[in-house]
Image 1: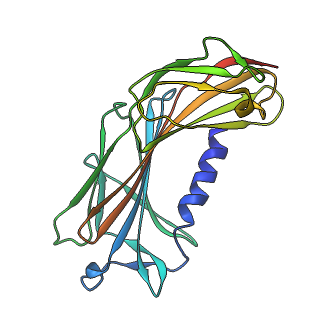
Image 2: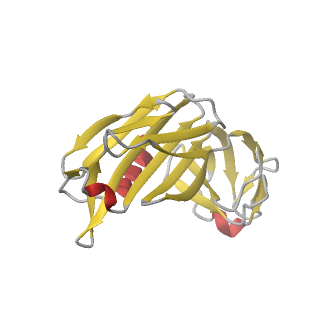
Length: 229
């Protein structure tokens, strides 16, 4: 299932880009640049993946860019020139969950590095103390830091047979426990489901002519829960 999710994310991520690619030159550095920064944590594998793409607006269209250097927490990210979409920078490593992730890049060799960071709070564990009833609803209890206004939560249900269902959790700010009514669970499949949470944070950070669109996601290890009528 994670493979399907990652493929969907890659499509969304790549939609920012178009087929032509230009390298940054000194004359290019005066143009506004957008950096699309993504990091994902997988609790059950204790690993993270980060991908970054750069582009500038030229003739009202986004133009993919190749930068001189980009690091993730001091480690160089590798460039992959994806046919049809331009360069993308990627790095996979083990990271301490809940710690700051910092991207640092240089547009050209002579310029100073520019940094931008994000912190994704982990969800250590979660449960549904009263079970999950499609009629009565459910209560989700999480062992985690309270959610902030720039965070969202999605619950993924994977039944043994049937379709995968996704439930978006509203009104999260200041909470780590949520009540979901039955009408929010109507698409779930009855029976044993594998359940996992995706905690997401989205931030925008502008430094001079550089805009960082940052997204971080935390995938919990799955648990098994029975869904009843």
